Length: 315
Image 1 (tube, rainbow, N blue to C red):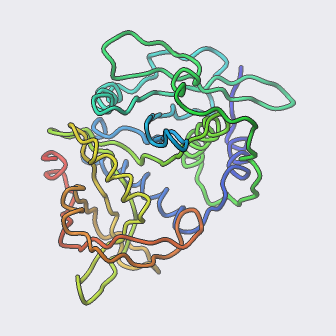
Image 2: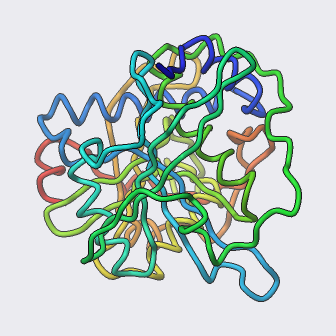
């Protein structure tokens, strides 16, 4: 039996997480809250788990190859010593990955295989390409990242000492699965990495989503607004540039104020509308999830509408 316990996962996150500031913690909880909300609407089958999107680095080749990877979420009670099975693949991922494949983003499902003993456990991720019209099998990550430059020497991603005690056991399962996969890939290949908070399978389009918890700010020139860091904004613009049937959503868990963080409602806007109404003048934001000061794009509140059951059925 090869398992990974919750305490072992916490210990890993303590070393892999550069910081766990308030913004990052609120963001993680907003993602979990969104999935619970969609489930309460009876539409959980329309939302896929999140993952990572990796872009090729290199002076001549930057951005030429893009790969999306969606990790299996580990179960602390499960034996992961055996080779992965196709039965673990979420059904919605097949359609979502087919949409991404059509616009040039190769997409994979990743499943862990654990080995080792008392001296330490080793997690190796096996990848299987989805969304293509031919039979595929689980294989080493090298086959998915053939266009990427391989690191000539390993980088120490496990050098931090971050307090993760505020994470629930459920949060730990999700975050460990995502973080371990990210480190596994970045330790082997030179890549630019960004997270995918989730994907909504709509009636007309497939939507990668960016989820934030925010209280509105106010300026005299545009009234109340929500800010989106420039990094996520550029990522959504990247999806728009590829287009096809892939659109994107900015989802906001609106709260009354930053002090009480009392939930108010769920709001959303499609990227087309976001780009149309976003202010051309950015603002200096607060502390980003990485701990540094961010620059934000201001989107007026009037560009958003409430994300209720009716809206979810229409998108």
